[in-house]
Length: 204
Length: 253
Image 1 (tube, chains in turn blue, orange):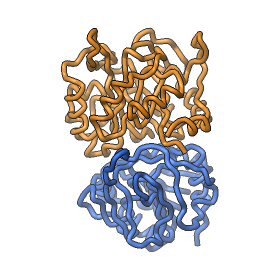
Image 2 (image 1 turned 90 degrees about the vertical axis):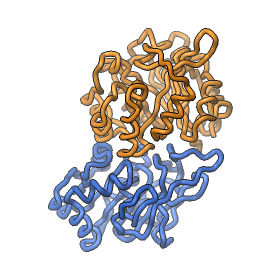
Image 3 (image 1 turned 180 degrees about the vertical axis):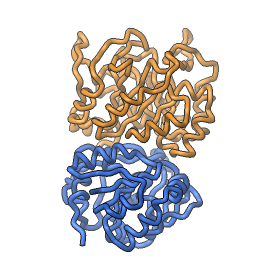
């Protein structure tokens, strides 16, 4: 069973729909026990960084997901804001993030011809091999909607990058913890390929 | 890969889809859920749903219908129509829409937009402008599905929406709606040069050459259309269609 953490922020239904399409047994939950019982968890998220962290800390799930990711070391996938909060914090606000990956988020610099938010379809360049990309084809395109982007302190955590005026980190991985800035649940067959790989991911 | 989004705009009236001409003469097109399934297969960039009778009927969004639509959609989607509260906006996101489009409420209660932006982020709120040119060719703004003329100027209203933090502007020409006579490029350019957020051109597209004009001459970031994606041929026979990806890649940046 894959648990989608319901902390009041995010497009739970679209994530759930895509996981089901990929063949997963899915539960949307706000209960710590259900999180701890899950084989994998998915951390969705849309919106402001501080609002997301405030909601997560108030949800009662914080302790369970920390334990899940750091002690049990089972797979976690964060999407969009759910990926950004894996880091230490963001220029968007003052709240500390989960601190699982050594990174912070900063706003895209405005430059001629580059509009912010970065909104639309774009390609990714893989920076290391990962089971998450097993089914992703070379011409794959993914849907992005964001004004802030992740910046890892350790380049080993960078899973993929994308160009929007500058090259930015569009996916991260540290061990069992994965994050995508883009929305696989809204990226048609390309997103389905990535979600399917996450569903089938084997872990120790 | 072309990055210009090509977006079908689907108009909801009751449980069905319609297409208008100059915001009138709504013609029934078909069932929204079935259309979403077809657009999934066609790998459409994004879909916009506008409930054109919500505000005129003084009601909010039809959440049951939106839930059914979202259940079939594996592409990004926006919804607009009848938005008056933060709670409605939250519910639409929870159902699986990425963006909420605001129009009439932007004239009545702009603080709702600021609140929505601070909670959900600017990237998820789209400001929509319905524009009609008057006898002298001056742009005038309309709310309430084109029924009510607003006194605020285009420039003033745009800067207010940007100040509220909207992440995108959808500019729709009422005069060109459903006419397939090409976009109002001057209007699109005027909007795009006044804001730094992405601008979606809408109203009048008949084909890919109009998309190209909106982007190259109008500086639009994305192009939207209605008739083009639901009608074929001179007799406007209903058929859901979407341009070939290769063709789009060759023509659009």
